[in-house]
Length: 262
Ligand code: IPE
Ligand code: IPE
Ligand code: MG
Image (cartoon, rainbow, N blue to C red):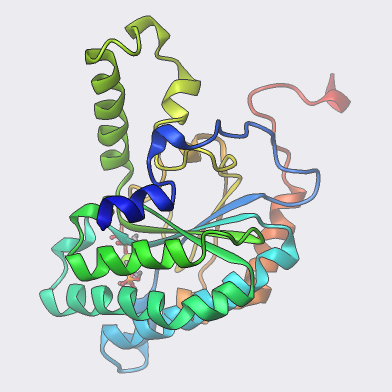
């Protein structure tokens, strides 16, 4: 059953199409990553348990997902649970796991109505069976949608992703399918969790911290970075619009000298 679902949703990296290396259209970012931080502090400021912040965070995600297609965003990667987040108190981890299932169950119809395809990146197979199956089912149910890819990073870590990528390539080398000298950036890209998705143009971090916290280490190498002090549960469509506006003002030089200054 699990294998069937995995095949159906095209989770197999080998079957993913070649990644688009096209830059974002002159306008806005095609692929936005959000480090949804500050739920705990948001709740504590209100004298509420941290879990209340996570619950409110789901509402913020709903608003942001809805706004993405209007802003021309094709892929939204939402950092929901990191490989490091297992070290939190058990109650909090349990609540986050519960929210993942709730989100998949409750949102799937609305997401379908809005043309959103759910995808997941991270070590999904290492999640408890309930969470794992619910995620695969949500992916299966929304797989035909084309307006937006909502890429949920769950049990995701940039280091773990690179380990998995290297293992996958090493297995191909061992099987004689790939020669070591054939390993290049494009081959690596096709083995990352994000194979087939456009380049990550913009990373948004809420709640003010100036770090990646193990988020998309390969993919963020040339992303624009935008940090706001707003805590994730307070994020609205307007905050996303502000980030996109700022992105459009940036010069993405990619190490070169821009035409006008030559
Ligand atoms: C982000 O909010 C949500 C997750 C990491 C799952 P936090 O829970 O990290 O909130 P703060 O950073 O403690 O305020
Ligand atoms: C990053 O936030 C992970 C997610 C948003 C899921 P954290 O709160 O876990 O990161 P640190 O502890 O500030 O680095
Ligand atoms: Mg945090």
